[in-house]
Length: 278
Image 1: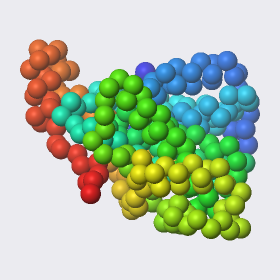
Image 2 (image 1 turned 180 degrees about the horizontal axis):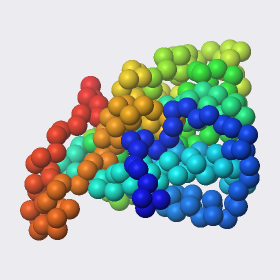
Image 3 (image 1 turned 45 degrees about the vertical axis):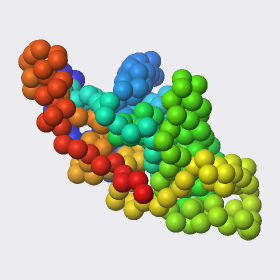
């Protein structure tokens, strides 16, 4: 892989599976590769979804699965100069983005949901997982994603409170599905929502008590989309930048003085508006 050519995204938009791709491979080497990539996801949110997909084939990996892992390695080779950045000039407020790819898994028909949570302009928490149950509609899948994201925001709020950090305003959670947002304010259970009563009550209670604010966000601005599916180059790079994964400044790569390189990089970094809070 040292001589491989780099690619712009860690996943292929479409993959063609041939009969030879279904041949099983040695799972030991596959697990070693994916296990190493799992450690990298702690600081590289841009590969979280691709690694999550690779982890789903631990038991019986095939040639196609190994090829998908090699795509991640080829992507990483081309962005070795990138890092995740945090800026201290940031507001003490939490903003969450959540999204789901309904029936994203062709085998189980379960959705893949993802979220990312920002403190000011800094992304401090992210996740990409397959939903534990099959959802009967996209609104239901989005609502389950809202519940999982709300639970993470609740935990972060308690964590900040324990270290004496008080938020300036209630956290906001942004979703691109109007039906799911309408379910929060609709107190009447009906055929399509009564079976998700626990998730319903959890989110509704947070919103009704004023400790969480839910808002609509257009799909084109939904940063969490990067955690649910393979994206084309342009969309992927835009969302990657918003997550805080930026290229190292040239002065830092040349081994310049840390203090000067840090100040120069902050001054040269364009301001990124994650979301304008109202």
